[in-house]
Length: 373
Image (cartoon, rainbow, N blue to C red; front, side):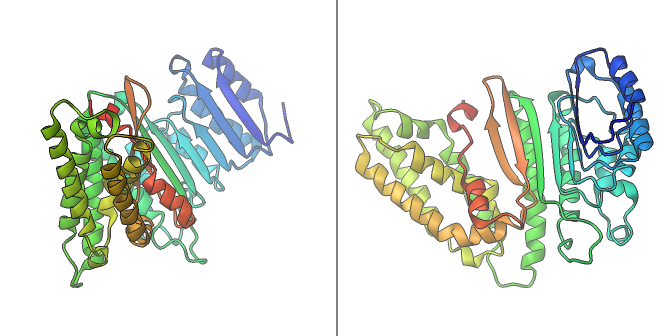
């Protein structure tokens, strides 16, 4: 059965997988450019990978988009999957359900491979979307996978802007890690891997320069995050003054002191300012500004701190925008429901405008009151 004009195909595995494999065996789709596959976990079939490879080879088409993010329906570590990539030299968008080390290592562009990329190297890849589910989400796998993913991103962004480069630069990368709330140390490990990598990049940038040590900024940013996210501060923002007025005043004095420490920073004295982004300090300041709207009682004191927070963001903006473009990924945690959380790592592409990047790095999507319970 040849469908010569079909360009987009959505496959939903609601029937037994063998039925879908049989359908693919009968199809020839010479104009196919986009393929989306969805399936419940109990409907997954590794046999589908082989059937898909045969169908693409028979059709002579070249996929531009391939998505299989709902389940591990494709065996991304198999030779059949790499054959699928070889048959899709124009692939620009790839969405996968899981992380496979062999596949990630293949995506790294080594300097010796860039001039003459192999067909399976995905030289036209611009967007990558990966979902990482709990069964493969452990602290040991974090230490193994996350640094490799950062290498993939950096190798496919740095130095790929020139017109004569045979490989396209990545423009959008998302990694969503769904996990159970009890595994807090895992997300900490993920961010620490990112921080360590970024500090090494910062050392290269500031080598020989008479600038302040980046570790100072990292320490200050992490200290502010720890204090801001402390549950006691939630009482400042969401509740009326507690019976213990002295404790309430003490909290405000400490919060005021931390804001003063931020105000004392001269970002022009640092080679890069990504520590503030990695620890979500801009997002927390904006979170404070927006979450205290309409509050009464301590209005004068709250308004004063809100004004100072807004002034800080304005003063920091040019430095943060400059350095956000150097970041491999931007750290975010999204609380999805009472039982699960999603850690989202989003690459900040150079092609994005200043306003879009600014919204990304100041977007207060972290539900502090839920995360730190």
